[in-house]
Image 1 (spheres, rainbow, N blue to C red):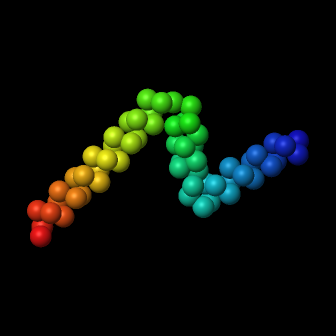
Image 2 (image 1 turned 120 degrees about the horizontal axis):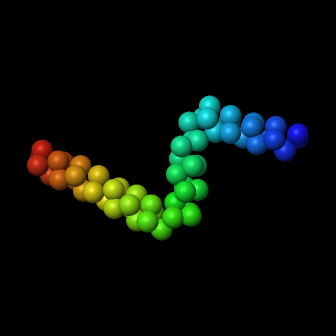
Image 3 (image 1 turned 135 degrees about the horizontal axis):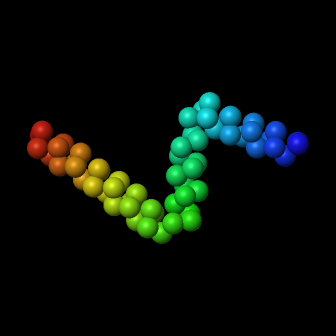
Amino acid sequence: MKQNENETAKVLALFVTGFLTEIALIQSMMRSKTLTVMVIVGVVLFVGFFYFLFNMAT
């Protein structure tokens, strides 16, 4: 029962701090190469889009 309480406390702490989704994403990315590639491509496209907008504004 002590192990279950510790796990529940960890999840609750991550939920309260707002890091639960980030930790879950990182854990999923460590198991899936496809997800890792998709996240990297998405971040590159997202940053590239804002770089394009910044260059168009100046």
